[in-house]
Length: 79
Image (cartoon, rainbow, N blue to C red; front, side, top):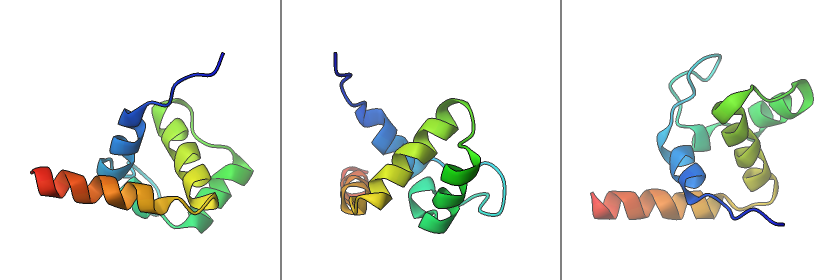
C-alpha cells in the first residue's frame, strides 16, 4: 500500500527554521544542498526534523524546489 503524501510537510518546509547548527534560524527550504548532502552521508536527525530534511534533500536532488517557492508565494498572497 502506498502512503499518501502529507501536504503539511511541504508547508512546514517553507515555514520552519533550522533549530540548531551552522544554519540555525534559516528557513528549512533555504538550506544549501551541500548541508543536506552532509546529513545524507552522516544520517538525518530522528523525528520530524529528520523527516523534513530528508524530504527537502529529495526535493532538491530532483530539481523540485519550484514547488516550495510556489507554496511560499501562495502563503504570502493569502496572508
